[in-house]
Length: 73
Image (cartoon, rainbow, N blue to C red; front, side, top):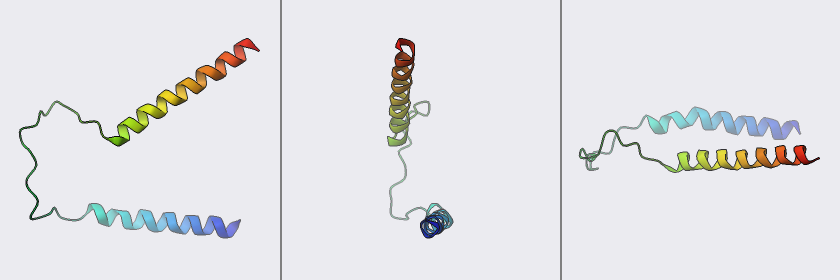
């Protein structure tokens, strides 16, 4: 069990130490500039927001079902 914990800890530490290098890369010189015509007040939803919203809904449903079972018991 300690071998598993040690290997998971090592992999996690290496991931967090090396993931900062990816974000520190300069922008692509041949890429087109971002679209300046976008609405600055509009906030785009990406996959992470949808995942958080769906997880919150799922957790809320589970809590309601658990509370309903407790009330009926």
